[in-house]
Image (tube, rainbow, N blue to C red):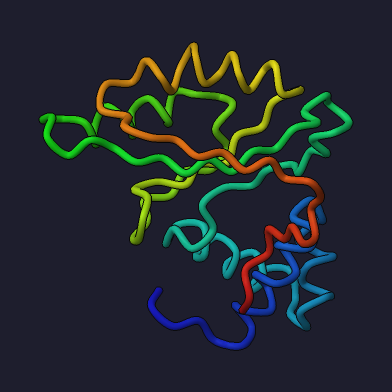
Length: 153
């Protein structure tokens, strides 16, 4: 599905707001009957446009008070460094986002932990043990100004 029509975009907008609603409620919101709406949703799922459904959890209410954006630079001279680092990031539950970047650093990772001591333990127990990590610069998030999961359509 390369280009989405207006109805498919509207379905995606509505699902990004609330994916827990019934097909009938969704159909009413986008101006379709249930069966064509259901077919469109299935097509969006099967084509991979909709990757999965999930619940958004308030991190502070579950004890993850500290959010850190860490900028990681890798040593370039060791073979397999990138693969090892990326595999380690995939395996770390504290790392909720990891981006390979251009510029001064190789990766930016978003880490969620209960407090600064937990972040220190994460650094020493995980990051510093990954072969090829040359440098890490951490920025503690003071406040979340904007956090959206819905993509602009």
